[in-house]
Length: 143
Image (tube, one colour):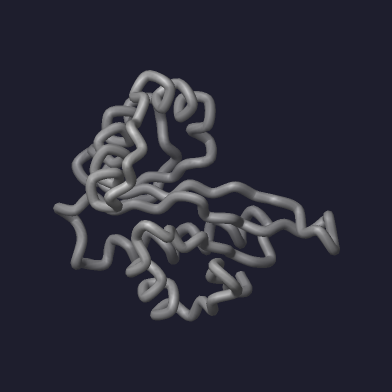
């Protein structure tokens, strides 16, 4: 398994992951597939994917934002993380997070921040196991 930048060939994976998330979260939002694919295609540089046999099965989406009190520093804000249900229960999520942390550190981030998805509150347990501390509804750890 290797974390790599997303590319245009991953759009089908992202569409399937979005539909699965909506089903699992119970979110009544109806995904506009054409709009989602268009937005994703414009923002592929924000996504890293794990692949096995050239097929994506997990991803992480990261924005780098300046720190308000020191604009020369940045925060890596993970806004999306997903592991295909067929690949859960192993180490894929942990590998995804640890590799994203290393990527953030190389990019100069001083802090890694994960949003806890309110529709899927169990994800916070994963962050806690990896040393993240909740700050309001965010989980943060120094990079």
